[in-house]
Length: 110
Image (cartoon, rainbow, N blue to C red):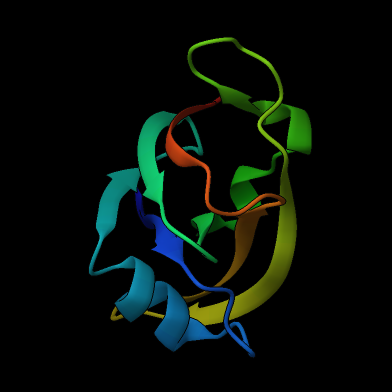
């Protein structure tokens, strides 16, 4: 299983391992053998929702749905970066919501 990261943030100038491991990692992290999970986000002014997981887990925009309505939640790959852990170096996709400041949103990733 690999670590996955999620949270909210103002879009950074540069997406890098620090953004994933610290900015997102300080908000939400877990182990997973795939991208699937439900995440509850609360975004404020200028903030977007993020979910970063290994590139090997795949995924498409239609995999991100509002958990209440099951309507596509509007996520895109903002960047693909390399992250080095104590076990390996791996590519991670950083998925970003297209909209900001949405308040409370539950997102189901399939």
